Image (cartoon, rainbow, N blue to C red; front, side, top):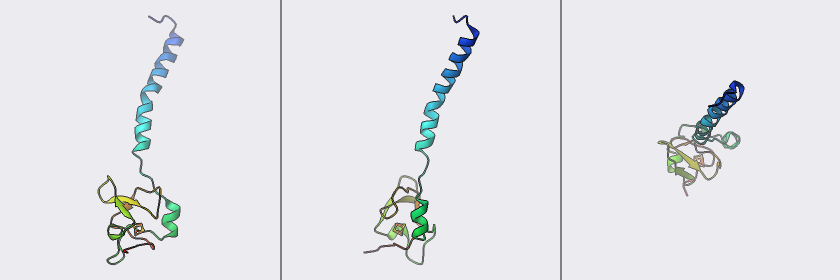
Length: 92
Ligand code: SF4
């Protein structure tokens, strides 16, 4: 069909590259986000402090991933552990 071997190779390479695009996009969207700067400022930790933990904090919202969610105080972070804690823990 395509008598030009160079052109055939270019077409094959382009086809392979196009086939990888959905894999790259899915990989990026599945990647979790964290807000390292605010975590550090608020002394966030993945473990509770006594009875205080993210799960009982008013700022916490459970996410799709079991045991993790988001926090209104730490935007752009969907890896807040339900058993975590930070200096802004709020029960009121
Ligand atoms: S404010 Fe702190 S304790 Fe409360 S949910 Fe956010 S990270 Fe957890």
